[in-house]
Length: 139
Image (tube, rainbow, N blue to C red):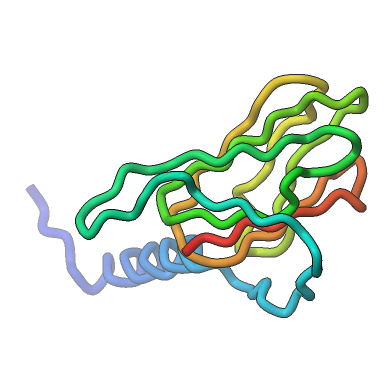
């Protein structure tokens, strides 16, 4: 069996490591977005014990042409579930590099969920009604 030179495989390994790192950290920042005042905040209902905690779930209702609550705060590993029950179709689409994975299909009725694995602020909107916006803060 022929030997493979480490010198030839090093650029491939390096390129793979760089690509993997970029996909994990994102290439932009959503931190410059203005906060909206006077919006409701929901928090995870799970108590945070001193040791390991079980992931929690928070529901955002999509009805009456709005996300309710508009802003939610969850922990790393928690799931946000969007429940669609409006007369019009809607979707959930992340805004900015950090939120690229948030991308639901268009729903008339039903639910769609996303589990947040990294702390940060994730902004989103409805692709059909861009004035419908929300934020998930992951601590």
